[in-house]
Length: 241
Image 1: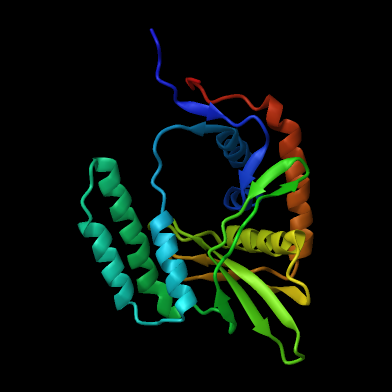
Image 2 (image 1 turned 180 degrees about the horizontal axis):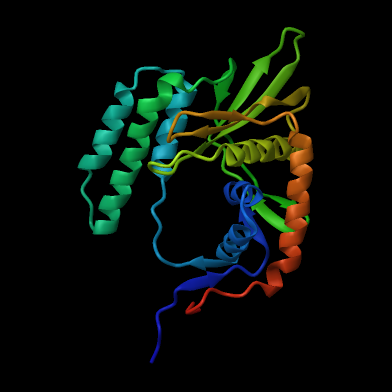
């Protein structure tokens, strides 16, 4: 009797910036679970917030403060025809994401800077691990000394559950290290204060902390450990490939 496949195996070490931040703030038990889930990815359809993130990225870049625009986008998703129960959930969850941002955006204070398109975002390799990143906007500012400083922002959202502060700080520290690693534009410098993780659930904004260089070094060490353990990570019980 054939059993339906439940997981796919990722042969080479890979983790997203989001999960790496979770990993750095996690207990040892949770760390093992995160890495296992990255290696053995469930094939079940997962609700993604791609459409909400595109809408919010555009709204943030516009500098607009009138959230009635977002209410219209949310309503459009809720009224969209769905071909399945999954699609209905997908549209409603994306609408929830937008509505939640609209509720907290008034106190989501961003630094004074030009807010630009995220542009092309490439993965990086850290000690044998491919780390993928998802930027939702970039920041650029001219200082009083006529130096151009740059940064970027990532959105995080979990319905009804604010992001833990340590995770937000780790994610922004990664962002600071990531932008330095890929190399900023000529005559610009990455400013940790412009490297931001935005928690859509509660409106908190986490800039990269003062020890971000040291934190990124810890992430490099963590990636080396992940790469070393990867071949020996066991699949979940009852997984079918």
